[in-house]
Image (cartoon, rainbow, N blue to C red; front, side, top):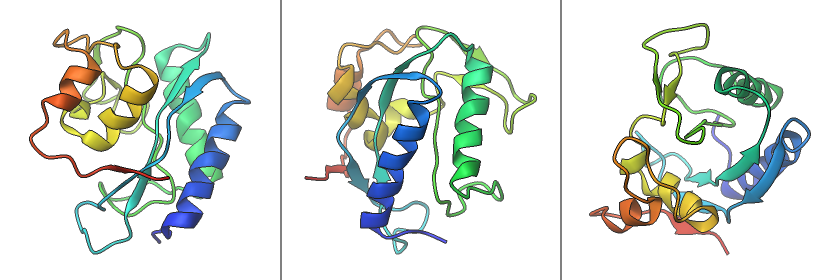
Length: 157
């Protein structure tokens, strides 16, 4: 069941607070609103990014993110189905990984597939790490965002 924007904002902020008990949250971006996908008639999504520091490896970190999601009621079903919370591991430093399948749903892919095409991912990252470069292309997140033909994510004030 999708949540309205105000509860979604609260949920994202609560999730970051829980995450800060698991890893060291170094920075959190402002919140952004973006149209729901694949059905824009659904309530808009609330997006944000966090820069974290951890001794966990990427697999353990992704498992921790999935555990936080589950703690907030996320149930993994059909791809792109509405969900209460979606925490993605976009990047892990300059690490590259492409597991078609693994112990985690869908395997681990780093950087996250298609992140460079999504303004709702790039805009929050740009707020906290504008000079971070995609290890695949070497392009900065700032340049990736500037190169998008359409931008629909809007900062929530």
